[in-house]
Structures are given as structure tokens and as C-alpha cells.
Length: 397
Ligand SMILES: C[S@@+](CC[C@H](N)C(=O)[O-])C[C@H]1O[C@@H](n2cnc3c(N)ncnc32)[C@H](O)[C@@H]1O
Picture (cartoon, rainbow, N blue to C red):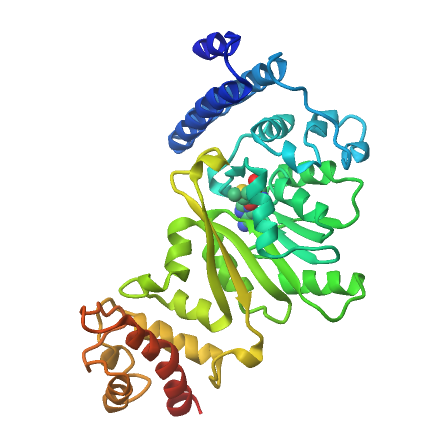
């Protein structure tokens, strides 16, 4: 930290440079902390203390430096609504431009918090990306939006400014407190302290619709979620086309590509791909480099939109449960031939016929690697069309 002071004290540094220096040091520091935190409780506590000191010192350096602007009170701010005694949270402003590195650090500091790896806490430092997330869902006045993991409330702020009513589900009680204080005067926001993976989102949404006295229309989901719960979130939300029209998620880039990019639907094709395409029309929107987060994750992220289908547009299967259990059987056992992995559902002959119908060899497996001569579309067709229609006709009716 001694080196940092010398750097910040140099008058020739621009604000951007100062912030960049501190940000990098903090980012590295946090990454190190993350790496060390598994070395036992004692080491963990020492690290927590060291980290707190680092954050406090850096924040002071940033905010006391005359080169940097003082945080301003926004025009549309929730500060007025923050209770007396909670002044430390005031720095978190309701103006989107303020949700940058400064505000994030200050907000975390106000609660004595540091980002927790177990909760996937990588906070967004770039308000423009929050704007783009909201734009990807075309959030507008009167919309009902579900946000998972509001954190410091930077995306929540953009959603509220767009005129949406927001239901935010946050697992970390400290972040819940922070967001509630920040937006205390705003009644279009409800913050629940729950684990999204375990919560009854359908009943929460229905009671929100009821309170808004809107029995028709759909809600939207816009969220920068922790990477480690992305599959759970997708599995929970995509079949809810009766509640949500759009689900816009910031995912790990690799996951985003695997879910959406058709050119990767070869040996990477998995039951989750069938699930995603069954319930939605996914689209890869744009990449979000890791440098936009604090602390910086080890991977880049990307925004994906899922346009949810209505039940009438789902592929015609007699029972979705049986269908997905068949899909999971088909993928069971790496390299296993479909003829074998589905033998408890139908005869080898039937499967060979289904494969033959789309020009695939009888030896095709669920994780079949495509020879150059065999376009992946044929296999996709088998999994998405033939397996569905053939399966529903032959096996489930
Ligand atoms: C990647 S951070 C994003 C924070 C904020 N939305 C932003 O963009 O800066 C993920 C947030 O989700 C919260 N979170 C983690 N696991 C969760 C869970 N199971 N249910 C709800 N929230 C969760 C974390 O506490 C954190 O605030």
C-alpha cells in the first residue's frame, strides 16, 4: 500500500489513472484473497482483516484525493429516504453514472463487506453494461422485472429509472440491507432475502401481479447472476413462459456460447441445449470483458437473451417429464450408442429407424462427434425433431 500512496500523490496522474491503479491493486488483492480463503478459518480471518484495511485505505485515498470529484447528490436519489444513522450508505447514489468503481467500493465499505466467492459476488462497474442489459429486455415504464442478486443495486437502479417495478431476490442479508436503504423511498421495489434456487418464484410473481392488479401481461427477468447458479436459474425460469416473456442474463461467456452458439452444437451438445431450445429462443447478445467487474473474475462474461415460448409453442410431446428423462437417458454414459442407452424405452429397431430417418448411422451416440461430411444439423434434427416427434408418437402416446 506504500507504493500506492506514492502513486496517488503524484499530481500528474489523471483521475482515470488513479482509479485504474487502485482498481488493479484491489482487484489483484481480492483475487489473492479468494485464493487464500480456503486455507482454514484463521487464515481466512486474517485475510478478511487485511482486506478490510486495503479497502478502507483505498477508498479514503480515492475520496480524499483532490484530483477526484466529490460524489454528488443525484437529482433522482434515494438518499432522502435513507434513515438517520445509515449515513454511511448514502454514498450509493441512485444515478446510474455513479455506480462505478468508487461507489461500489464505498457501498461495500459502508457495510464492512468484501466480495464473497461463495456467493459469486463480482460487482458490475460499468453502468453502460447495465443500460445495455435493460435495453436487451426492452425494459420500459410499467414493466414488472425480476432481478436475481441485486448486490449494491447498480442494475436495480437502471431498471427503476426505466420505470419498471422490480422484485429483487438477494441471498446475502448485508446486500439486502444495502439495497433497501438505498432505495428506501421508492415503492416500485421489493427486495426479498432468499436463495433464488430455493425460493417459490412463481408464487412471488403471482402475488406481485395481484398487487399490481394485472392479471394479464408478462414480467421480464434482467440479472447479473452468480456464475455458479446459472444452470439452476435457467432450469427454473425457462419453463415459466406463462409468467415471463424475456429472460436476460449475464453469464460466464463459455456457458453463454455453449448454450446458444449453433456451431458448438456438436460434441458439446448436452441435455441442457435441448432444454433451452425446448422452452425458449436463445440469443447471444454481446461479450462483457472481465475487467468490468470487481473483483475481476478469471473469465469473461456475455449477455444472453432467452425469449420464452408459450406452452402452445413447445414441441409436441405427451409429457415433458418423460421426454426430458428420455433425453437424459440418451446422454447417459459417454460415447454410449443411442441404440443401447435408450433400450429400456424402445427396441433397437425403432431407434435405428429414427436414426436412419435423418441419415445417421445406427452407431450414433448422444455425444456423437461429427465427421466432416455429416452436417451437425442432421444430428440436431434427430435430437430436436425426430427424437421429439418420434419419441412422443412412439414412446409416450
Ligand atoms: C455477480 S453479483 C451481481 C451483483 C449486482 N447485480 C451487480 O451487477 O453488480 C451476484 C449477486 O447475487 C447474489 N447471490 C448469490 N447467490 C444467490 C442466490 N442463490 N440467490 C440470490 N442471490 C444470490 C450475490 O450476493 C450478489 O449480490
